[in-house]
Image (cartoon, rainbow, N blue to C red; front, side):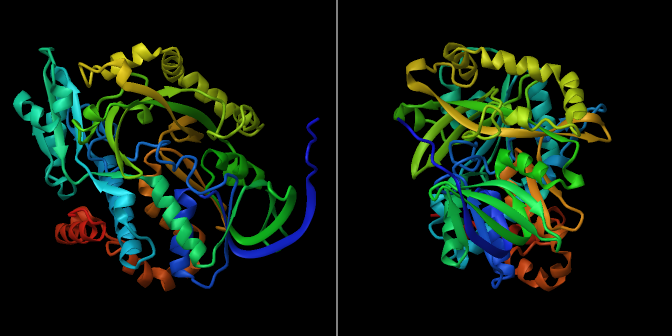
Length: 501
């Protein structure tokens, strides 16, 4: 008969300068930056799974787009006067440029190797169908091409040109409906799982203690202002206690529960809404080799931004792949490896009104998710056939993607606003911070972690600035305002990340 293993209390108590919870791209990035800025600090990392980068950062749990706002139509919107607002696209692109500079620094300083194992150059494209959408895309292109960040973008509504750009999509296309696309060759495909594992391995080589199969059960504030983290060692079947001056909650969907355990006022009136996803993955190598781009379309009415349909070339473990999706789904889990009780456990007295207000406002999202859940594989294939007219079911299989938790909070826009993006929540004294939200997420890990450092270590920032500028030459500047620096950085990152090989 199976017996429950008894959890014992441990006499293991440790003291660190920094504790990182979760071994995903966010914790890995923060730990890596801090190790460069303060090499003598003791950093400890806890991960409940057996290795790094297995949840949201895993290569099959995100789109790997390297979000630079080159192709995602949800980052640009048409204003009431007909003009196109590209401010969000500019912000996302500037952030991705920062991440690229830091990755280049890691490669140049041999802190990670073989960049082709985590990043590959790949055209980014937007594709639309229908006269109104073509008109919108052309206006978007005309607006974006004026900005140095989007230099090199091309537009075409000529079927012959599109056959050269996207032969798989144009092959056997019978519809007379207008079709157009934009293309820019400076896009990338990023394997964030591989990148995370590289960075964490380097942290271990630099003396950071990385504890796998360790789950955090509680976080308590001590009288001296530090934090005590109660951790379950799954292998040793015991509870341990670890203290630190600063704690970062980078546990993906699990960060919300941990934030609530801290009891800080900044964590109140915040809820989370989990959205899962599915992709169709091509199993036919002949088809895979006919496509070489990330092609984003327009989201359906009521769809969340993370559900914008896209046909993606991916490079996973050195092999070319082709995925289409994502199809939204729903699970009450906050992590792919989480519990079906996660959503219910996150409901507290301080956020229940926020959650109820959101539910009342987001009926279209609820309807969309129900429709998505009811889709058969044949119906998903019909959506794929909007991209690839002659797609056959036997060439595609359903792959379960990652779990995302969208932030719900009270804003100036009203109570219970569903946020689509990445957010940092930190205590007033900067002793603890949490990363919540979803896309663009991993792509903006470096600037988001620099924001954490700015908020939580203001007394150190002036001393650290020279080193930050060494790692990120554009730090403190807008590249769109300095085209010569932008060109210089494009050239240096392309060389460091071996885009020209």
